[in-house]
Figure 1: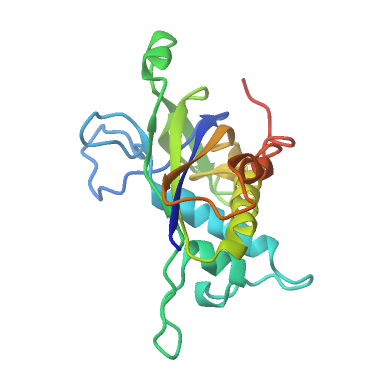
Figure 2 (figure 1 turned 30 degrees about the vertical axis):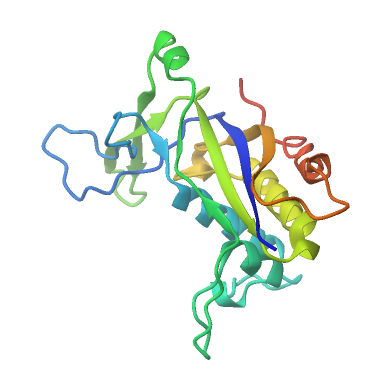
Length: 231
């Protein structure tokens, strides 16, 4: 039995968000660290790989036994994490296909943001060498707080008994991310986000007997209970 669900949410930027574009080349006078943009529209985007990588890291860290601080390799993650995010081949050459697929996230409130000043800002920063007091100035481009991105996940169910547990794991990942940060320079205040307006719909197949959509949505109800409040 194969079931495919589309899970969607709105991700709101609460503090300036920087996910860099590694072009490897910056002409004289250009911005040091631009954000990654959609080559079609020129608007900032949030790559699905950034969401997946940070969410998996946070879930793996949360699953660590008490007193263990060094994370294992991805292939050694807890079973509920591997089921959602997949795993490279183990020693026997057996990879695990991810049941959850991430999509790039695109702006949903472009017109609103343009009315209040644009999509990004440039933040000037300095690092200062303590021994010499020499400053090393740099500038970071950031997506402005208040920007909203449409986030979509596609989930494939082949074992009905894991469906509700997998939704709880995804909800936990969203909650952990809302309490941490996305992108770079998070310890300096960048990258606080929150998730809201979750929706789940059946894209293919039928739900297992005894499970309805409302039951699957329930784990997402308190994702932002402790989120850092922005605007």
